Length: 343
Image 1: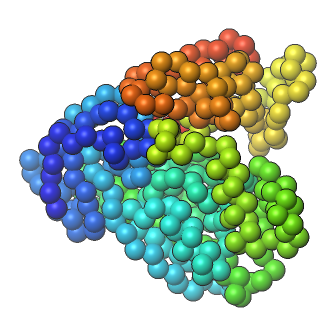
Image 2 (image 1 turned 90 degrees about the vertical axis):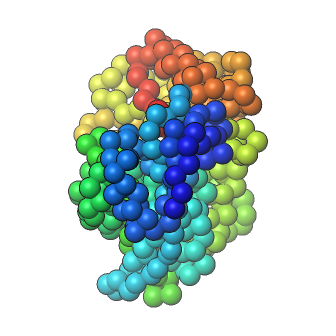
């Protein structure tokens, strides 16, 4: 294991903005991580864990130690009945895990195809798409305390999952490195009558276009991948972190007041007498979709995606985000919150 000084982080994030870590190390095992934590010269350094770098925006250099999680490995164990427990290292690419499971006929992750990032970052965000969230299949995770090297195991309730939320964005923020995640999936070799979730985000329509009447793991994944490719820019071409903002959840009473002014506002019921509003629609109504500001802008086919068109700084992207938040607040009285982790 090597500790590098003044490491450029641009190549490790999908936004592709310039930022430097004063110290940087990649760990490939729990043993290496504990060795790093035990280094006395690093005891008081601020520490930041970096996975796939797909949900982070650096607005300045990081004056401390960035630890890149490269702990790999995927294993499967029998569960009860048709359930199979899949355990993956935190440094595994998320879509690599999805592909691995589909190849073995394990169901539950197909709607989460092509979400960028690492397995270790997935619980932090409680990633989700097309009617499925990580918490739906989550069983437990293992993490290491970045200050003591001690291990913890957390089940679903201990992670306090919410909409793009978990305990790792609040009380445990910056305190742990997640080195493994275990998921409970359905083995279709045992349970061929599995019911696919295809009623959100145009998945059913895409299957219809393909003439699919009986969904399969492969057909659902293909549909999801095509939908994402049509809407989202390739980070290799245009730096981005996917959806920059969360879809706001507002009280039912507030929605009803807004619906009088905006009868076409899309909305979805949410627990607790609340309503979820698509942030992309709000941003588009404020005229931001496809707009460029300097080297950054809002993507032309998806208003939730902020893009680095080349040469943008993290501060430029953040300034654009602030302007969008201000517009939506003034027009709708709704506060947009970032989904991206900002440093």
